[in-house]
Length: 174
Image (cartoon, rainbow, N blue to C red; front, side):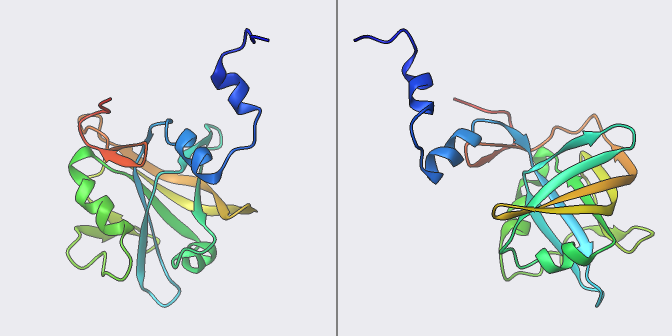
């Protein structure tokens, strides 16, 4: 019997692997962000994240997530404030640096501290300074809801994009 439904619809009803799920999610292009905070001992931490989006305009709330096994998770979990930096296309090397393990991410990175002591990176497309409002454990990630205290943006800067497992500084090419 020949089905009237396309193969892609029929396929979605079948079980799928983690790789298939990840590849399907990868078809949604996102911006690339670096989230920064400061530990209770005063150490600057930061990590590259592509899971970021708006939750509410009033009040101004944003959401991002971090894997339960990330080395920086304890700092973000206990920090009162953090900053979300939407990277510009020119900042691809910075995104790669903050995605690496075992390196001093702030040693040669231009930044200054916010009034709450959070490292703020320079040259970004947008920056959101947030109060760590709520956290929710879901699956293998911890979801962070941040209340935005301050934000800035630079519309003249092209954003860095993440699509299909790769960062793109000049749009997405097929």
